[in-house]
Length: 315
Picture (tube, rainbow, N blue to C red):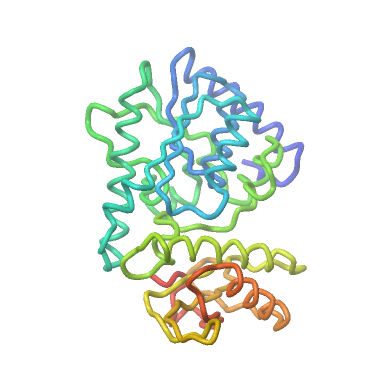
Protein backbone atom coordinates (compact mmCIF):
# COMPACT_ATOMS: atom_id res chain seq x y z
CA UNK A 1 0.00 0.00 0.00
CA UNK A 2 1.37 3.41 -1.02
CA UNK A 3 2.03 5.82 1.84
CA UNK A 4 -0.33 8.80 1.90
CA UNK A 5 1.95 11.79 1.62
CA UNK A 6 0.15 14.18 -0.75
CA UNK A 7 -3.26 15.78 -1.15
CA UNK A 8 -3.93 13.73 -4.29
CA UNK A 9 -3.21 10.43 -2.52
CA UNK A 10 -5.35 11.52 0.43
CA UNK A 11 -8.27 12.36 -1.86
CA UNK A 12 -7.97 8.97 -3.59
CA UNK A 13 -7.95 7.28 -0.17
CA UNK A 14 -11.04 9.25 0.90
CA UNK A 15 -12.94 8.27 -2.27
CA UNK A 16 -12.05 4.61 -1.74
CA UNK A 17 -13.02 4.63 1.96
CA UNK A 18 -16.31 6.47 1.34
CA UNK A 19 -17.26 3.73 -1.12
CA UNK A 20 -16.22 0.97 1.32
CA UNK A 21 -18.13 2.55 4.22
CA UNK A 22 -21.31 2.85 2.15
CA UNK A 23 -21.04 -0.80 1.12
CA UNK A 24 -20.36 -1.99 4.69
CA UNK A 25 -22.97 0.11 6.48
CA UNK A 26 -25.81 0.37 3.96
CA UNK A 27 -28.72 2.22 5.55
CA UNK A 28 -27.81 1.31 9.14
CA UNK A 29 -26.55 3.63 11.91
CA UNK A 30 -22.99 3.91 13.19
CA UNK A 31 -21.93 5.04 16.67
CA UNK A 32 -18.66 6.89 17.33
CA UNK A 33 -17.04 8.18 20.52
CA UNK A 34 -15.72 11.52 19.29
CA UNK A 35 -13.00 12.87 21.56
CA UNK A 36 -11.85 15.67 19.30
CA UNK A 37 -8.45 14.04 18.89
CA UNK A 38 -6.87 13.51 15.48
CA UNK A 39 -7.92 9.89 14.92
CA UNK A 40 -11.56 10.09 16.00
CA UNK A 41 -12.02 13.45 14.25
CA UNK A 42 -10.73 12.12 10.92
CA UNK A 43 -12.93 9.03 11.25
CA UNK A 44 -15.94 11.24 12.02
CA UNK A 45 -15.28 13.47 9.00
CA UNK A 46 -14.88 10.41 6.75
CA UNK A 47 -18.12 8.86 7.97
CA UNK A 48 -20.05 12.13 7.69
CA UNK A 49 -18.89 12.37 4.08
CA UNK A 50 -19.98 8.77 3.46
CA UNK A 51 -23.25 8.38 5.41
CA UNK A 52 -24.14 11.78 6.87
CA UNK A 53 -26.82 11.62 9.56
CA UNK A 54 -26.51 7.84 9.87
CA UNK A 55 -23.44 8.53 12.01
CA UNK A 56 -24.16 9.30 15.66
CA UNK A 57 -21.19 11.03 17.31
CA UNK A 58 -21.05 11.06 21.12
CA UNK A 59 -18.76 13.64 22.67
CA UNK A 60 -18.32 13.19 26.42
CA UNK A 61 -16.99 16.23 28.25
CA UNK A 62 -15.51 14.79 31.44
CA UNK A 63 -14.02 18.10 32.55
CA UNK A 64 -10.45 16.99 31.89
CA UNK A 65 -10.09 18.40 28.38
CA UNK A 66 -7.93 21.36 27.42
CA UNK A 67 -9.36 24.86 27.15
CA UNK A 68 -11.67 25.27 24.16
CA UNK A 69 -11.67 21.63 23.06
CA UNK A 70 -15.34 20.75 23.76
CA UNK A 71 -16.40 23.99 22.08
CA UNK A 72 -14.28 23.19 19.03
CA UNK A 73 -15.86 19.75 18.65
CA UNK A 74 -19.33 21.35 18.64
CA UNK A 75 -18.26 24.15 16.27
CA UNK A 76 -16.52 21.89 13.72
CA UNK A 77 -18.83 18.89 13.69
CA UNK A 78 -22.30 20.15 14.62
CA UNK A 79 -22.16 23.68 13.25
CA UNK A 80 -19.88 23.27 10.22
CA UNK A 81 -20.37 19.64 9.19
CA UNK A 82 -23.98 19.24 10.33
CA UNK A 83 -23.09 16.09 12.23
CA UNK A 84 -25.58 14.11 14.29
CA UNK A 85 -23.70 15.02 17.48
CA UNK A 86 -24.69 14.11 21.02
CA UNK A 87 -22.87 16.32 23.53
CA UNK A 88 -22.75 14.99 27.09
CA UNK A 89 -21.78 17.35 29.92
CA UNK A 90 -20.50 14.84 32.48
CA UNK A 91 -18.09 17.17 34.29
CA UNK A 92 -19.78 16.99 37.70
CA UNK A 93 -20.19 13.24 37.44
CA UNK A 94 -16.50 12.60 36.73
CA UNK A 95 -15.17 15.05 39.29
CA UNK A 96 -17.41 13.61 42.01
CA UNK A 97 -16.03 10.13 41.25
CA UNK A 98 -12.47 11.47 41.38
CA UNK A 99 -12.85 13.50 44.57
CA UNK A 100 -10.15 12.61 47.08
CA UNK A 101 -8.48 10.02 44.82
CA UNK A 102 -4.70 10.52 44.84
CA UNK A 103 -3.21 7.36 43.31
CA UNK A 104 -2.52 7.88 39.56
CA UNK A 105 -3.50 4.42 38.37
CA UNK A 106 -6.72 4.51 40.35
CA UNK A 107 -7.57 7.87 38.78
CA UNK A 108 -6.96 6.39 35.32
CA UNK A 109 -9.22 3.42 36.03
CA UNK A 110 -12.02 5.63 37.36
CA UNK A 111 -11.86 7.90 34.31
CA UNK A 112 -11.83 4.95 31.88
CA UNK A 113 -14.62 3.04 33.62
CA UNK A 114 -16.85 6.11 33.99
CA UNK A 115 -16.36 6.99 30.33
CA UNK A 116 -17.59 3.53 29.33
CA UNK A 117 -20.64 3.92 31.58
CA UNK A 118 -21.53 7.34 30.16
CA UNK A 119 -21.00 6.16 26.58
CA UNK A 120 -23.09 3.04 27.20
CA UNK A 121 -25.95 5.12 28.63
CA UNK A 122 -25.96 7.40 25.61
CA UNK A 123 -25.68 4.45 23.21
CA UNK A 124 -28.75 2.81 24.75
CA UNK A 125 -30.77 5.94 23.99
CA UNK A 126 -30.11 5.46 20.27
CA UNK A 127 -32.17 3.19 18.02
CA UNK A 128 -30.94 1.14 15.09
CA UNK A 129 -27.22 1.21 15.91
CA UNK A 130 -25.50 -1.77 14.29
CA UNK A 131 -21.95 -0.50 13.85
CA UNK A 132 -19.28 1.01 16.10
CA UNK A 133 -16.68 3.27 14.47
CA UNK A 134 -13.22 3.49 16.01
CA UNK A 135 -10.14 5.58 15.33
CA UNK A 136 -7.78 2.61 15.40
CA UNK A 137 -4.58 3.31 13.45
CA UNK A 138 -1.84 0.94 12.33
CA UNK A 139 0.53 1.42 15.31
CA UNK A 140 -2.36 0.44 17.62
CA UNK A 141 -2.61 -2.90 15.82
CA UNK A 142 1.15 -3.43 15.95
CA UNK A 143 1.42 -2.53 19.63
CA UNK A 144 -1.71 -4.05 21.09
CA UNK A 145 -3.01 -6.77 18.80
CA UNK A 146 -5.83 -4.58 17.57
CA UNK A 147 -7.05 -3.50 21.00
CA UNK A 148 -6.74 0.23 21.60
CA UNK A 149 -7.38 0.48 25.31
CA UNK A 150 -6.71 4.15 25.95
CA UNK A 151 -8.66 5.94 23.24
CA UNK A 152 -11.31 3.71 21.72
CA UNK A 153 -14.37 2.22 23.29
CA UNK A 154 -13.68 -1.15 24.83
CA UNK A 155 -15.43 -2.87 27.71
CA UNK A 156 -18.99 -2.44 26.45
CA UNK A 157 -21.41 -5.11 27.75
CA UNK A 158 -22.13 -8.26 25.77
CA UNK A 159 -25.51 -7.01 24.56
CA UNK A 160 -23.84 -3.97 22.97
CA UNK A 161 -21.27 -5.62 20.72
CA UNK A 162 -21.37 -3.99 17.29
CA UNK A 163 -19.63 -4.66 14.00
CA UNK A 164 -16.58 -2.40 13.79
CA UNK A 165 -15.92 0.31 11.22
CA UNK A 166 -12.21 1.21 11.26
CA UNK A 167 -11.42 3.19 8.11
CA UNK A 168 -7.93 4.42 9.10
CA UNK A 169 -6.63 1.24 10.70
CA UNK A 170 -3.87 0.77 8.09
CA UNK A 171 -2.58 4.35 8.35
CA UNK A 172 0.19 5.87 10.43
CA UNK A 173 -0.44 9.08 12.36
CA UNK A 174 1.24 11.31 9.78
CA UNK A 175 -1.00 9.81 7.07
CA UNK A 176 -4.11 10.35 9.19
CA UNK A 177 -3.14 14.03 9.45
CA UNK A 178 -2.82 14.34 5.64
CA UNK A 179 -6.27 12.78 5.24
CA UNK A 180 -7.66 15.14 7.89
CA UNK A 181 -6.32 18.14 5.96
CA UNK A 182 -7.91 16.84 2.76
CA UNK A 183 -11.23 16.48 4.60
CA UNK A 184 -11.08 20.15 5.60
CA UNK A 185 -10.54 19.76 9.33
CA UNK A 186 -8.87 22.77 11.02
CA UNK A 187 -5.09 22.67 11.47
CA UNK A 188 -5.24 22.90 15.26
CA UNK A 189 -7.33 19.71 15.27
CA UNK A 190 -5.34 17.86 12.60
CA UNK A 191 -2.00 18.75 14.21
CA UNK A 192 -3.19 18.50 17.79
CA UNK A 193 -0.29 17.38 19.96
CA UNK A 194 -0.50 14.04 21.80
CA UNK A 195 -2.86 14.13 24.76
CA UNK A 196 -3.18 11.41 27.41
CA UNK A 197 -6.42 9.44 27.67
CA UNK A 198 -7.09 10.68 31.24
CA UNK A 199 -6.53 14.23 29.99
CA UNK A 200 -5.62 16.91 32.49
CA UNK A 201 -6.26 14.38 35.24
CA UNK A 202 -2.60 13.29 35.02
CA UNK A 203 -1.37 16.91 34.96
CA UNK A 204 -3.30 17.88 38.08
CA UNK A 205 -1.30 15.52 40.27
CA UNK A 206 -2.68 13.90 43.40
CA UNK A 207 -6.34 14.39 44.28
CA UNK A 208 -8.05 16.57 41.67
CA UNK A 209 -9.78 19.72 42.88
CA UNK A 210 -11.87 21.99 40.68
CA UNK A 211 -9.81 25.11 41.40
CA UNK A 212 -6.48 23.44 40.65
CA UNK A 213 -7.93 21.74 37.56
CA UNK A 214 -9.04 25.13 36.23
CA UNK A 215 -5.59 26.53 37.01
CA UNK A 216 -3.99 23.71 34.97
CA UNK A 217 -6.37 24.37 32.08
CA UNK A 218 -5.79 28.13 32.00
CA UNK A 219 -2.00 27.94 32.47
CA UNK A 220 -1.76 25.24 29.80
CA UNK A 221 -3.65 27.44 27.33
CA UNK A 222 -1.20 30.29 27.93
CA UNK A 223 1.83 28.04 27.46
CA UNK A 224 0.43 26.55 24.25
CA UNK A 225 -0.36 29.99 22.87
CA UNK A 226 3.15 31.29 23.57
CA UNK A 227 5.13 28.21 22.48
CA UNK A 228 3.21 28.09 19.20
CA UNK A 229 5.05 31.31 18.32
CA UNK A 230 8.31 29.32 18.06
CA UNK A 231 9.59 28.60 14.55
CA UNK A 232 10.01 24.90 15.26
CA UNK A 233 7.39 23.44 17.58
CA UNK A 234 8.27 20.81 20.19
CA UNK A 235 6.58 17.43 19.88
CA UNK A 236 4.67 18.05 23.12
CA UNK A 237 4.30 21.01 25.47
CA UNK A 238 2.03 21.49 28.46
CA UNK A 239 1.68 22.50 32.10
CA UNK A 240 1.41 20.31 35.19
CA UNK A 241 0.46 21.60 38.63
CA UNK A 242 1.65 19.37 41.49
CA UNK A 243 -0.45 19.10 44.63
CA UNK A 244 2.04 21.21 46.60
CA UNK A 245 1.73 24.77 47.84
CA UNK A 246 4.42 27.33 48.58
CA UNK A 247 4.51 30.82 50.05
CA UNK A 248 3.89 33.87 47.90
CA UNK A 249 3.38 37.59 48.55
CA UNK A 250 0.52 39.62 47.10
CA UNK A 251 -0.58 43.12 48.12
CA UNK A 252 1.98 42.98 50.93
CA UNK A 253 0.49 39.80 52.40
CA UNK A 254 1.84 36.25 52.48
CA UNK A 255 -0.32 33.49 51.02
CA UNK A 256 -0.02 29.89 49.84
CA UNK A 257 -0.16 29.15 46.10
CA UNK A 258 0.63 26.48 43.52
CA UNK A 259 3.53 26.16 41.10
CA UNK A 260 2.87 25.77 37.37
CA UNK A 261 5.46 23.48 35.77
CA UNK A 262 6.16 24.01 32.06
CA UNK A 263 7.21 20.90 30.12
CA UNK A 264 8.31 20.83 26.46
CA UNK A 265 9.90 17.75 24.89
CA UNK A 266 10.89 16.20 21.59
CA UNK A 267 10.75 12.48 20.89
CA UNK A 268 10.75 10.07 17.98
CA UNK A 269 9.12 7.05 19.61
CA UNK A 270 7.98 8.28 23.09
CA UNK A 271 10.34 5.68 24.60
CA UNK A 272 12.99 8.33 25.07
CA UNK A 273 12.47 12.10 25.10
CA UNK A 274 14.62 15.21 25.37
CA UNK A 275 13.73 18.52 26.97
CA UNK A 276 13.40 21.36 24.45
CA UNK A 277 15.21 24.64 25.05
CA UNK A 278 12.74 27.50 25.48
CA UNK A 279 14.06 31.05 24.98
CA UNK A 280 14.27 32.87 28.28
CA UNK A 281 12.27 35.84 26.98
CA UNK A 282 9.45 33.44 26.19
CA UNK A 283 9.73 31.80 29.61
CA UNK A 284 9.48 35.21 31.29
CA UNK A 285 6.45 36.11 29.17
CA UNK A 286 4.72 32.86 30.10
CA UNK A 287 5.65 33.40 33.75
CA UNK A 288 4.23 36.92 33.82
CA UNK A 289 1.01 35.92 32.06
CA UNK A 290 0.39 32.83 34.19
CA UNK A 291 0.92 34.65 37.49
CA UNK A 292 -1.19 37.61 36.37
CA UNK A 293 -4.01 35.67 34.69
CA UNK A 294 -4.37 32.40 36.61
CA UNK A 295 -5.71 32.56 40.19
CA UNK A 296 -3.84 30.50 42.78
CA UNK A 297 -0.46 30.27 41.03
CA UNK A 298 2.53 32.10 42.52
CA UNK A 299 5.48 30.25 40.95
CA UNK A 300 6.36 29.10 37.43
CA UNK A 301 8.94 26.33 36.99
CA UNK A 302 10.55 24.79 33.91
CA UNK A 303 10.95 21.01 33.84
CA UNK A 304 14.14 20.25 31.89
CA UNK A 305 14.16 16.51 32.67
CA UNK A 306 14.77 13.97 29.91
CA UNK A 307 13.17 10.55 29.58
CA UNK A 308 14.60 8.42 31.08
CA UNK A 309 14.72 8.98 34.06
CA UNK A 310 11.64 11.24 34.09
CA UNK A 311 8.51 10.18 32.23
CA UNK A 312 6.85 12.57 29.78
CA UNK A 313 3.77 13.06 31.96
CA UNK A 314 3.99 13.78 35.70
CA UNK A 315 1.69 10.84 36.52
